[in-house]
Length: 337
Image (tube, rainbow, N blue to C red):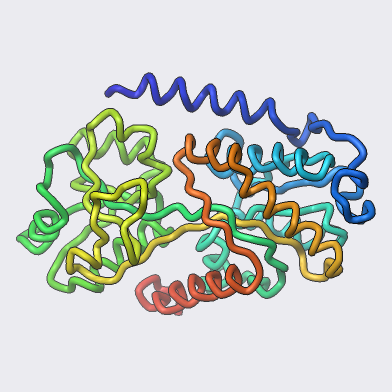
């Protein structure tokens, strides 16, 4: 497996990003925030904590660390990262709900993971997306279906195999997650196909299973596969989106290939606890807009396989409502009724 160059690139990027901003124990630098942000010093007012619900070194962590560097550049303030892991992100989001409503604590929000705990009645979670105030979306990480090089000529050949005796096996990273849901929806759209899900611990396990021939395909996201595409050991069969994506211009959507309108668009944005005053939120939205759309920040994320898709205001909330509705519609298949 020819992954050495990809690992070196990832390590270099991680070191660069970790050096470029603060973390929970070593704050980043900044000076005179009130002069820099142009909003009379109302925000940031001291150190801002950015909560990440997933572990250090993962793509969510690297994304928020990169953003912190550019938030410091735009505001002159100090931003530190705190990784609060567990409950598929909800440990961090519960902490945000109990934070002061002054804009000094902000969390990355990962969807559709946000919706799972409160839509699954067995979790007993009372808080919902209505308990937060959303700032903006930063990244959409499109779902893809991949197989080992040469295993199938195209998505049509794969679906033909899925409709044959025994069907096919498809790896993912856990029951009822967005990657598993994409497979469930593909099966619903093609009732004569058999797609048996195989839950793994992460992309590395899926990659090994794929190359080892123990699964026929893997439901993944573009950021999973970006660093290994150059190794030429995978074929991308389709994209789970309503249109082709720029980074994979030759890969059809599942819908385009005639096998159903299955859209998987995990997103990463940022939110506040409800109750932050309007002037503070306006300053936050302005800073996030400028930092996220900084050309150098966009380039850093692209090197990580992450595609910036900025949305704020009503566009972001409408997008989230649509994602939530998609999960609600699948509650019977997920056993959440």
